[in-house]
Image (cartoon, rainbow, N blue to C red; front, top):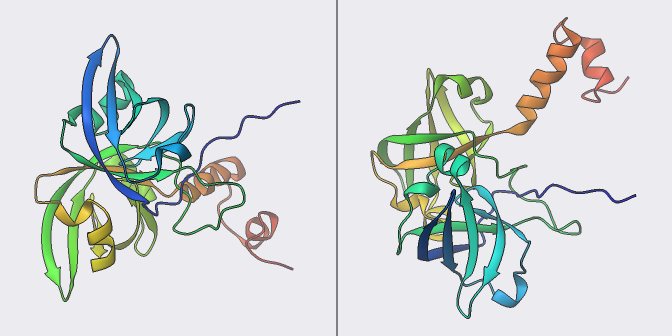
Length: 220
């Protein structure tokens, strides 16, 4: 029996790619991305995170790889607005024998957030991002969140807004350091919160000692 494994990412960006081709086709957009990742290490059929969106490599040229962006992906992410010259965060899918950093990122973007504020804090940048209300129940202070594919920690959360702190290392090695007020970003909340919500709905009685023991959060 053969089992299909879903791609998984960690939110640790490998490279900033450059979009070198955008062509509209029936029901999709084809994008070409130039990258510093050796193209010999990228194969057709590979999964790769592009600004946090899990895409499949459909082809390669001498200096770029290509992916198709469906109408649905264009609707719920920022990829439909991309143009030649835009920079994007890239991460290849986690290998089974790879070390795990960041947090579990699926590449399934839930919504587009908008940068509402930007300020300096020491040598770091603090971004305030607003999101649709329906995803805020999965965003918690000091929890994990992926913004344009980058694994970040939520500094604070209130109403439909949250803030993240961008240290110089992250700002210099991803695109987030260049984000300004009004810019759109792809948001994926922590999947662990969704699993917990699902378990709670099934149990119906909420969190108690038995629940924590049953699901391995504590030991007897």
